[in-house]
Image 1 (cartoon, rainbow, N blue to C red):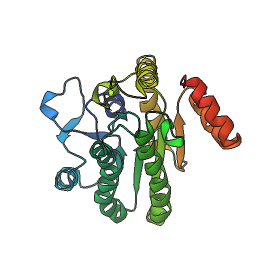
Image 2 (cartoon, rainbow, N blue to C red):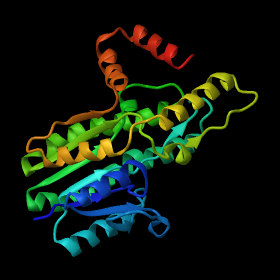
Image 3 (spheres, helix red, strand yellow):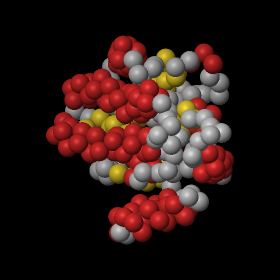
Length: 267
C-alpha cells in the first residue's frame, strides 16, 4: 500500500523538492501552501493549509483522511526566517515566527496523532535546522524556534513510541532556496549601534543560501528516513562545516566556541 504523506510548506525549496521526489517514489503526497493557486511545477496533490490557524490544519488533515483512509507520514517543513539584533527586532515579529516554526508544527502534530495512533503506525518528521543547535548572531530568534522544536520532538518521540509512531528531527544546513525572500528582516537602521555588523551578517547569510546545497539532497535523506525500520531521533543534512560546528559546540568550552563563531561572522 502506498504511504500517504502530508508535507507542510511544499510550495518551494526543500518542501517542493521532497514532495516531488516522494511522488516519483510512488508515495501518495499531499503538499500544502497558503496560496495553492499561485504554485507551478509540482507533481503531487496540493492543498491549502495555514499552519498558524488550527481550523485550517484540521480541515486539511480531515480532507486527506477522508480521501485516503489513512495518513502515514507528516513532514513539518513550513517555516519562516527572521533576522535582526534581539534589541531591535519587534517582539510581535518574533511571536509570528514562533507561531509558524514552533506552534504551527506542534498543532499539526496534534492533529495527525489520533489517526496515526489508531492505525498503529506513523512517522512525524520535523524539519529543524543546524542553527537550532546554537545561538547565531542576528538569527537568535530563528535559532530559538528550531532549537525548541528539536526538544519537543525528542519529548514527543518518547510519548508516542508505544503506539508505533516515531517523531524525528532533520536539521538541514544551507540549501539553495528562496528562504531569504520570505524572511522578516529587521531594517538596517542608519543610527543603529549594530549597523555595520548586522549588514555584514545579512550579506553572509544571503551568500550562504545562494551557495547552498541542492534541495534534492534533503529529499533523498527524507526518503531514506521514511523507509528505515528503526529511524534515529536526530539527523543532520549539511556540509562538513555545519556538522563539525555541532561537534565543536559539544566539546569546546563555551567561551572558545563563541569566539570561533564571532570570528566566522566577523564580529
